[in-house]
Length: 251
Image (cartoon, rainbow, N blue to C red):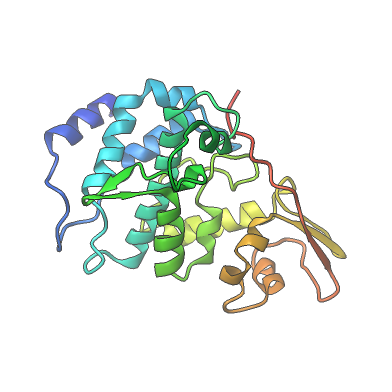
């Protein structure tokens, strides 16, 4: 049986629960998967105008996130990580379509002139449990601070061409390890993002910005060699590529 997105939205509205409390169950991210399959292509490019047209369905999923945040005492860690990755990616798209059209997510920081807001990642537009969060809160204060999981850097998407590809399915606790391994393998071996040869490697700036996350248990080269099809050696020269902040939009 084929179930349309509008039907699922109606179902969610009809069965909505109060905000999450201790002991609450984890949420289902199926609606997010349906939206991603519909509006993200195999290369990770996003149809932002499509998300605008599907604003009812998209809004229903965002409401699901804001009213059912993770219960740290009862949710498994994998479910918490999956939730926050999905939230970061979904609210990044929300930020883009709220200011669409833009050529880069960085342009939004120039459009919005607010006190103490230095970048689009500092805009507090995510309301959750009576607090207003920004994307930096999710990435740095939650994902990076609470969970020692460097592979999250291959899963969160900053709406830019040099970012890891936006996955065409929601992250879930049950599949999280395999999903993160898949994202790591694809990102590290993508020559547009990391050009790795035996004697020289041009790496994504992500490995420079967040080096401390990748080197807590090994060297950076050892971390990369877990996934890279071409292995880095002690004498491999490492440099970092320029980052392309242009919008990862499907044309």
